[in-house]
Length: 451
Image 1 (tube, helix red, strand yellow):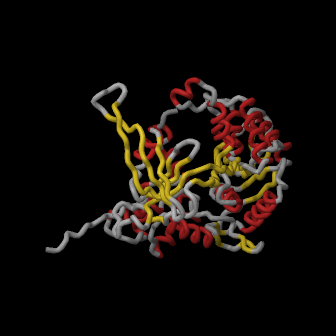
Image 2 (image 1 turned 180 degrees about the vertical axis):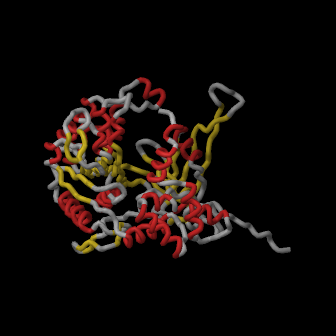
Image 3 (image 1 turned 135 degrees about the vertical axis):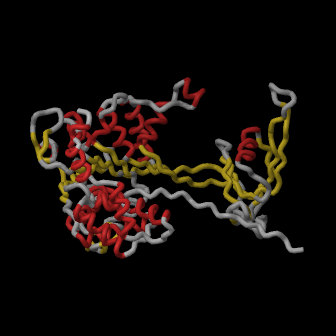
């Protein structure tokens, strides 16, 4: 009698596709801007300017300056800001916000900006910790009576034998480490780390010598560690200045001890000063390094005169991120004043900005961008569907054309098609109107809407 076959259905990973998730960099090779590379298309002059900005940042020459990306809607301003962050490195923090976000009833405008700036500054910390590492050769859990329920047993300790290629040791561990072992599902044959200071357990994987020939649990097979069981290991992790602010703001609170703390709405300046001093000390001793990130403020014309004054002062700070502003406005009133200025930005701040212009895309560039986005969103476009979307991008807007990609795919699938055809694009275009059609509808039925 043959053995029954075990059929395992692989779970699909959830992948969130963002509007700029396809961007990997500025698309510059050996100082030359390629027409299409790293997810960016066109905007040759703007990308060349952004490449110079990246070089200035790497040389530490951006102090007291910021960047303004100015151009019509849908011309890639946010994409270029994301690309700058990507060029600076994988760990570079990127914080995006709209100018209107500062108007919060729960927090001062300057506090919103300050928190955004500190979220955009990363601290890479190098921490050396004593750990016990090895494969679990034996594990015996000891149970005792619950102090409040004599009919219930709880783990009170364990005898643990760890083994490496060099040595083998047996340890008696307390109830905390035992609880960690149980919560992580550690069993004989697993390779683990135990933090000597905190007692936290990390399950690395299953030793290859103990791993079965078949695996239905997706457990990672690893080698038995070499060297001694007790060793010092470097852990590298990245936090932001805002993370450290929150940690220091919570410390010392009786409620935080009981309930784990709560996020402060506003953080006192003395807390931030202590954090800054601590970070400087870490940097001086080689324990940490600062990673200046990118703070991207879209719709910068929404900021008011107070916020602009704060940004001007903040740009001079020692611990300041790279500030990139974006505007699609021409001449506009500076919010909070009666003064009209280019992009709605005060002239004294505008004079300190490196301004990069973005220009409308050409038809062939729109076509290529749509192809890139279709690949990113896993939409299989027929040639006539791509042509139709390209025409929509030229006549209406690139954003509108991109937004029709996924709805068109869903319509195609509902009709039993694997490829998006022109008729599917036309179907979703009737269902979802663009700004121009929406404005026309408002004008036609103006009397029917509430005033």
